[in-house]
Length: 446
Ligand code: ADP
Ligand code: ZN
Ligand code: MG
Image (tube, rainbow, N blue to C red; front, top):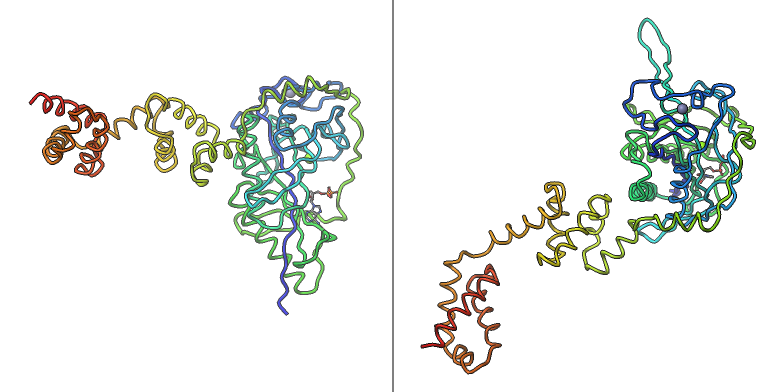
C-alpha cells in the first residue's frame, strides 16, 4: 500500500535589529563588513563587573513587530539568563527572555486563508561570530565580537506548517513586515534574518503532533531553505516507510552537498539553567506607552494590499509587486498623488512600475510622471495626421456640423469619436478638441 505522508513544521526566526547601538551597551550595532573586534566594550565582551543597560529602541521595535502580527503585548516583562558554554558567548550566558516574553500569541494569515499561529516574540542579545580556519598546516578558530550583544528578536511559531510553500510565504511576509517597520534589513544572506526549522512527518489523516522533531540549522537563503526542507522531509518519509523511527536531533544543512547531517542528538541536549537576570530590573509598560507605539506604526503590507485592490481595482499579481518593497509602495503612492495633476491613470502608473521597473529608473515620482506624459505624447498621432482626419470628418459629417451650428454642442463628442476612429485611437484628445473647435468656428462663419 502506498501511504501518504505530510510534514509538520514550526519555525524559530531570529531578526537582528538595526538599532544604532547594541542591546546592553553603547557600541555600534552595524557590524557587517567592519574590521573584527573594533566595536566592543567591557559589557559586550562579558567582562566581570560590567553592567548591562537595556536599549529602549530595541524593546520598542520588538513590540512594534508584535503589534503588527496580532500578538498581545506583555505589560510586565523581564530578562533571563540562558546558560551555555561556547566560545561565541563570553559571559557564559546569553541575556534572553524565558517565561515572560515581550509578545505572546499572534498570527499571520497566508494567501490561502490558512492561519499560522505565533507562540511568542522575545528579545535577546546576539553572540560573537566564529571563523574556523583550516588548512594543511594548521587549524584554528577566530572570534569576532563585533556582533556580540547586538539586539536580536526571536519569533517562535506553532508547528502549523504542512507545506514548504507555506514556510516560504510566511517568512517572506515576516521579512516584509519587518522592512516596512524599518526595524531590520532582515536579509538572510547577510545573517540579519536567521532561522531554525523544526520538522517532523506524519501520515496524512493523523492529527496529533509526531512524538519527535528534528531541528534544522544553518539555512541562510530562501533558495537553500526550500532545498533543505524538501531534502529533510524526504529523508524522514523514507525512514518511516522503512518502519523505522526518526531520531530526535539537531541537523545542519550542507549547501554544497545538498544534504542535511546530524549535529547533535537529544541525549546531548543542553539544560540552559534559565534564571532571572539580576542586573536588569523587570520592565513595566502602561497603556500610554503601548498606544504611543501603535501610533508610530506605518501602514503594513497586508493593509496596503487590501487598499490597492479595493481603491484602484488592480490585479492581485500587480498589487503583490507594488507592496513587495516599502520604497516601491511609497513611490507608487506618491505617483498616484501626483496623478491628480498629470491624469495618466493609476493603471498606467502601476503597469510601468510592475512590468518595466520604472520606479528604479527615475530618481523621483515627479520625473517618472513627466516621463509617462512624454511617452504618451510620442504615441499620439502627429499634428498633420490629426488635422487631416479632422478635415475629413467635418466634410463627411455635414449634418452633424449643421446641428452644431444650430446650437447642439453635444455633437462635438460624436465628432471627436469619428476623428479617433480615423486615427485608430491614437489621437491626442486635447489636440483633436482644439482643431475641431477651430474648424467648426471657421465652418460656422461660412
Ligand atoms: P522545545 O521544548 O524543544 O523548545 P517546543 O515545543 O517549544 O520545543 O517547540 C520549539 C519549536 O518546534 C516551535 O517552533 C514548534 O512550533 C516546533 N515544534 C514543536 N513540536 C513539533 C513537531 N512535532 N514537529 C515539528 N515542529 C515542532
Ligand atoms: Zn559594547
Ligand atoms: Mg533563542
